[in-house]
Image (cartoon, rainbow, N blue to C red; front, side):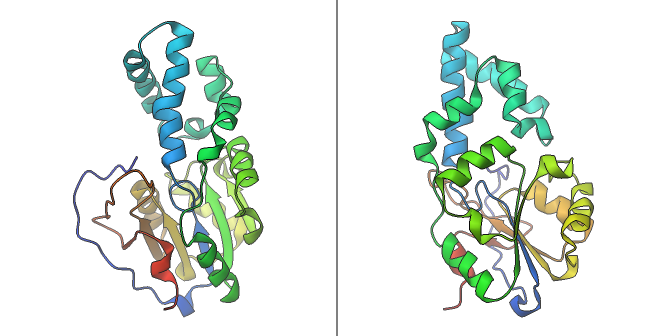
Length: 230
């Protein structure tokens, strides 16, 4: 879910596209509809957890919320193997059962094509675990568009850690003054800002089932259509 509880006025993006060499894109909520992830963690997992432990779904949700928060903003949060061990359930199998809910946001492919035509370096940078990434790449057509796909586990830190971006720079050799990062999590954008990333953009409609919520601190878009030439 969007962590920003405030109703903020939209800050419109106004970055120098011609001066940008590299585009870094988050996956869940940015390229893909976050409804899948919200439903999985907030409804589907609690339903199975309640059956496993013979408790109500409400009690399962309460117990899981505590466990989720213990590892928030760490690599464990996105690690399906970690959660399968912790909860005694095969979470990869559960994700596969509802993979029909995985969907690409409108205008994403158009934007990826625009980046390629503009000769930008194009990278998918996600906190998602490699097993989750495989499920989503199998279900969508976004993988081949990227020069490289980076999971946070490969970097060794979550994107919320400012040290993540220095390690990523060593891996990809981008110029942070000529790089655009697009993400639906403000904490990630703040960490990239602390590192010195010049161009930061917030996705205000990560889920098709949630209301639009603009950032108070960063330029926002609802759809990538806003970045395409008219």
